[in-house]
Length: 220
Image (cartoon, rainbow, N blue to C red; front, side):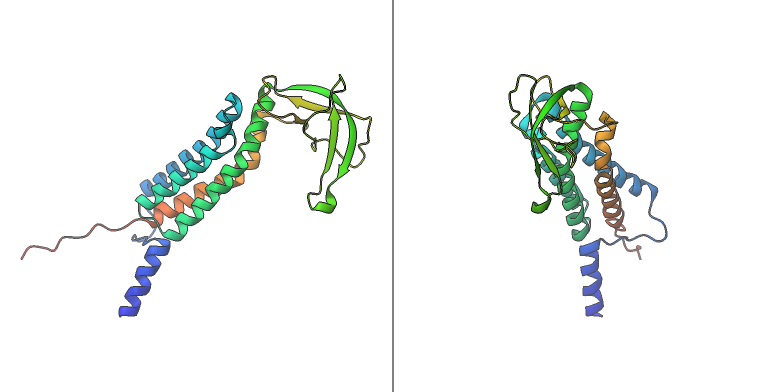
């Protein structure tokens, strides 16, 4: 009896009590969806805002990590299972670390200017495990760019070839190679899996946090 109670208590603490019969209440699912949507929007939104306005603390994902921590804290407040809180926190951190790259793509797709540069050298990084070709390039005046380009840099690329590069006119973002079909919305598609995972984790955590209210004993 005592062992059974301890196991039930441990399971409730780790995964949440989920004290309902049948399907979870619709408002509970809605609460989880709202929490996950607001949390992911804050994580991605701060990165996009930082890239757009040149705020390094936002653009580097630091604010996104704070938002991920706030989302985990909310789940702790609603007394979600500790394992589910940890899973959502981990997914939120991964999303915050991936968001800056996508945010830069959004800004460059929206206001970037495309120019042609000349390849000066090509490095194959396959041996180091990156599996990419990196092109050192120089602009039309022959000034070398401080960053190497991998988008559009391929095995067939050789020194002297022209490469299309998109610049940020405000100079807040480093240039990058042009990819066909790039759009602001398309730059965020790579985050779709992480966003869906965080939202799904929040829904499960909130739903399983449901506890029945203590029932007062009937008067004698």
